[in-house]
Image 1 (cartoon, rainbow, N blue to C red):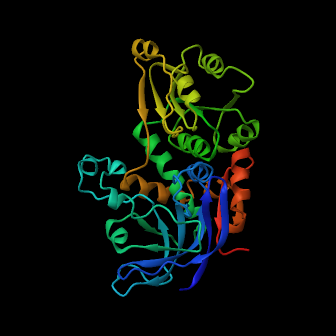
Image 2 (cartoon, rainbow, N blue to C red):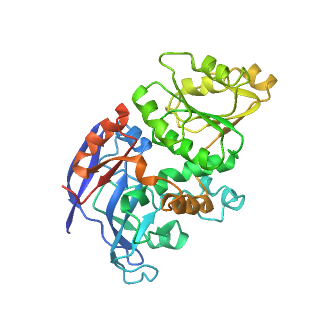
Length: 350
């Protein structure tokens, strides 16, 4: 067996870059040589908690792009040298959820786990069934691998803003100025939102967010964000509020920032088992709608990828740090402190 470099998780905050077995090529699949892999907030959450319940070592990483390095004897769709983006979602298109148009909630667990992780490494195996089910897109030669890797985090943002119809003349509040919040701000402006207000407790992140279409920032560690939003909207509240943090507190706050008849989106996942306190009378009497958002359909994933690699979206601007895989722990810290907007790891660089 040949070897490859990978970032293996041995436990919470215990990530070791070491040599491990290179995966074998499936007969009807392929081996992708990973050229770039994005570091996602959910990866960081998983890497810093006991996400595998003791089942280690494990390789995370799902924002995967690369070059076909090897093909199985029964594979005919792709050839060695093809540049591919590997969307982590895989859908059966046969269950009730898929048929109803919500393929992101595909209930076929075997299919949905076909792709989605193993990206913090130099190679990943892609099964034939993943190739047949779809969610693999070809990267044009004139697009960098780093830019193409951002097609994955843009996907859920694209789907969310489409699903809740963010557009003209919305005043939108985004809570959380991380990579996802910045994607949301930029895309909201492209969709026609008139005013984007960004809330965070990290001034460094807020300052950076101004580069991505944000009109006004609120540092909620220094002022009451609810009062600030009310003041900026003549006491009415925003048309839409998106809580894009892993914190219950921002979900609690969000319903106090939206106008009567407005819409609140819970975008970020919160700690498992935690509960959010909500003023249900406010929700009831103010006709507030609350929507949870996760994932994207195949249609949305394809269009988000096309946007990420097009001149219409300043994808490269979001990448603040390109690091070799060996520096994954540094990348985690840069993202946690807010110094980085988006870290892309390069498994073949020293």
